[in-house]
Amino acid sequence: MKRLFGVIGDPISHSMSPMMHNDAFKNLKIDGYYQPFRITPEDLATAIKGMKVIGIEGFNVTIPHKTSILPLVDRLDPLAKAIGAVNTVVRDGNDYVGYNSDGLGFIRSLQERWKKDFKNEKTLIIGAGGAAKAIYYSLASVGVKKIDICNRTTARAQGLVDHCPFKCETNILDFPQARQNLGAYTLVIQTTSIGMSPNINEIPFSLENMLPNTHAVDIIYNPLETKFLTEARQKGATTQNGIGMFVHQGAIAFEKWTGIKPDIIRMENIVMQHLG
Ligand code: ATR
Image 1 (tube, rainbow, N blue to C red):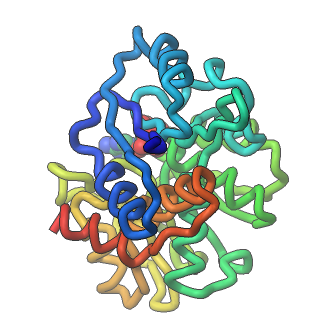
Image 2 (cartoon, rainbow, N blue to C red):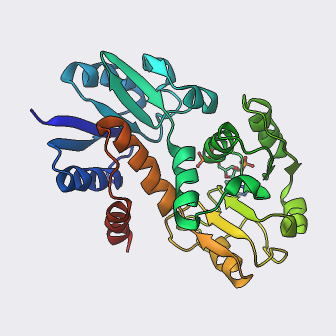
């Protein structure tokens, strides 16, 4: 019988995950199928029960369910619990176990693309929303000892740091301070929605002080090239967009479900074809 997987969200029709995972099943000759399910918030609890009864082995979780699913799974991985968000559910016996592969996907993308020991970088995260939290907590959980954060609302950044169970030394900056001190960082991670389509001409702040030895990441992938990435490259920085993080979070989920590492380049090509 076909092994069943999927993604739940609302909206869900734009999701690139089905084509990525279904291609990997085909390529690896796994008799599996990955289906997008549009589930409204009111139906979430019923949907999870139904998925379990039907025999769905694992699924991804996207907006708006990443936090509201927490009490609905049987067990939570400690990192997902700390982040307070689940993007991957794996069936273990009769239990659904919640994981968060967003931040770990981000880390793998850095390792794979740049072959760098990012633990020694002087890191600045721009933003303090859900994505920033997943990245900060994941970096801290793998032993990064110092990460600074800047956000429009500094109190939100403070809250993010205060709730982190993994030890990490952090200075919190507002945007003018970050702009001023940008030369102090060798890894700058843009996690806000600033610059996302359709607001493609926006940037959190000027990168005039960024140094050429910097590695700059924007987790946005629509557009593929944000103003942040363009300015960073103009300053001589090495850059990457959000495709790597997206593909790797999916690959980690795929590995948890099947025990097999999918072909990352193939996954990336599928996503690029769709966006290109
Ligand atoms: P996500 O889950 O994608 O991270 P989020 O939790 O809504 O989304 O977080 C959005 C991030 O983008 C926050 O850091 C937010 O800053 P605030 O905490 O100050 O709201 C930031 N952001 C979004 N629009 C912004 C804007 N126009 N100017 C500055 N920051 C913005």
